[in-house]
Length: 249
Image (tube, rainbow, N blue to C red; front, side, top):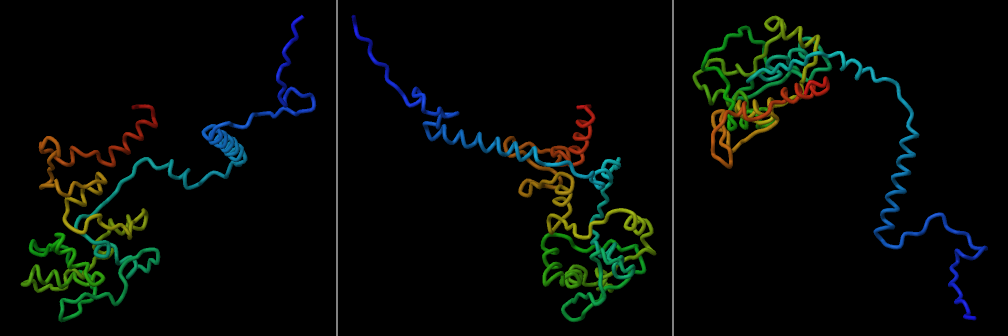
């Protein structure tokens, strides 16, 4: 009778050997996968340990807001329109005008002062080109009077740019500043002309080399298009998000 061949015995076949629950990964790739799986299970257990927190009153108040109105004033500085809130109304929460602020034309220092008239002449518009703004901001905002005098050498109101208004002239703004949020640390995105800053405010974008009087050329086709129509505005995104939340998109 043929003799049966003896079967090879592994350590798991022995009664006294304890079989491992899982085999050790044989390759580096398998080992890495195993570690990731273990980390994921650990993270899952950690997430389950978080406990509910109290309701956020600020978030609840935000849900009550039906409309957001953003009011921007072109070619007006914060100090010119609302700097008085700190200087005259003693609002410590506002970074506005303080006593002793001056500017020089190179020969004389001109202090801040209250303007007694709101109607400015056509030749009293402070220059706001990139070159002029750079001059005005030089020496820690010390070049406003000097640049104004250079732009309008014949104007007798050499210190016009150091003037400000208060609640006597700005009844509506005074009310809005008292009842709603004001941004005393919002600065224009571009130290220069109007159009780049309009684009940043409305579209969060700026086609500096392509911008030509409110129109731009497409880099590929060369076709001109109106900037305001070719760029999606931030309000469009807000509208789309609101409609999506209501299931209307």
